[in-house]
Length: 163
Image (cartoon, rainbow, N blue to C red; front, side):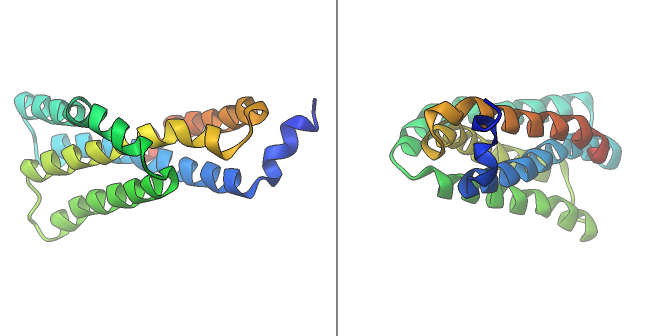
């Protein structure tokens, strides 16, 4: 039993996925939290503006979920995962850049949040079906437990870092 649970440590593709997903988890959580803090602390957003920001965060899932699912089903998942993460990182980088250039407005947060949400929808759909195609069925429990542990650490510490 112990030997079987050590197999994924030698699985290069899984280790890349695990490392990438850990970094992605931190980035996603920090980005989502930091956008809210930026709206409140830097832009002094009103409760109405924060409500719009929350709606903009949820809208992409409703608007693109079915389309993304059908599209992701027909394509290779790894490039979708990588492209979505790079896209989210670039979009989130526009916020501090706009702040440095003194062009940061709540509308930019709405736009970035919306497009990050679209990319997150594609990422999440591709991610759910990528692990079973990457490792064997007998390794899914180990793989999911390692990925879940990383997600828990990211959630716990990512909020503190975002603050």
